[in-house]
Image 1 (cartoon, rainbow, N blue to C red):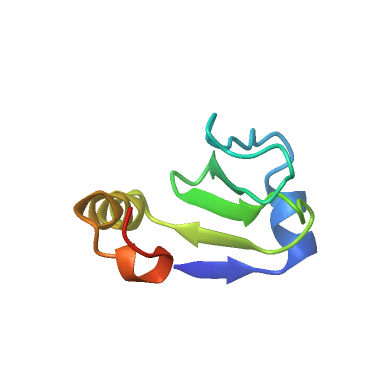
Image 2: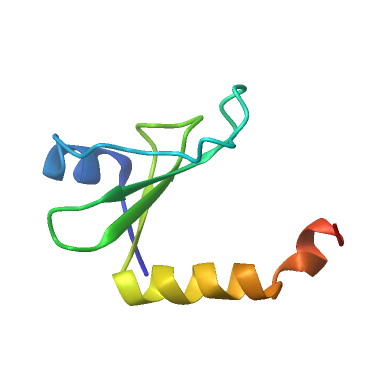
Length: 80
């Protein structure tokens, strides 16, 4: 994972389309993802669209999503 300063990534990726889950709430407290021209995945906070972007490889995102599905992070939010 890498992080970029707020101005740098937005200037570098002007045409990037940011997406959030259809299940996200309308209050804007959401995580947004984008496929970057570099082949990596950008992640940002929808409340701060001009703020910093976390940049992950596709393998890192795939591993993270698999760990969420396995329940590895359930302790952070309590059991469902």
